[in-house]
Length: 199
Image (cartoon, rainbow, N blue to C red):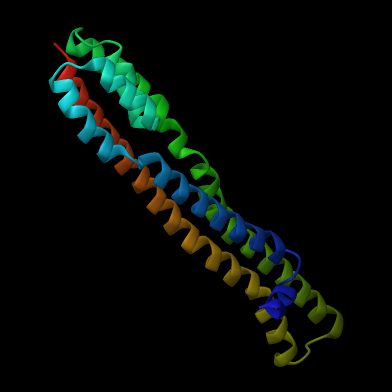
């Protein structure tokens, strides 16, 4: 691995950095998403009997104790308990939008990493080919082994760039779909609360 890194030239270092960055973003986002949804199901199970019995103060205390994004959306809804459903729903949607926004943090950077990695590899290949042909111009025709060795070294960066870009793109798609599922789940649970407290 170290030999390939050295053979690929200076552009292998940014490609390596892109791979480390992509992995770090993926792990951080997975951890963040797990924390984001923790306690959602249990919170709704605790709230439903309280809301059905119109014990809104107790429901607010339960939400404050949990303190996750769904709980904050529910607190915003509970402040308007007894008002028209459409008014509560508007406030819940606005609060939910603010709570969901952090889910997309770093996804743009991950997408950029997936885009830039093969371009760095291609740039390394072009620079390597230029060097190989410069050697050919200085030495004359040379041997096929000399030219082939230079070209194979030049292609290492393209292979490295693609080997970073393809998994990064897949991770980006996975995280994007996970954000959509979490946002939809939050919306469904929040609307169940709205239905229970709206007039």
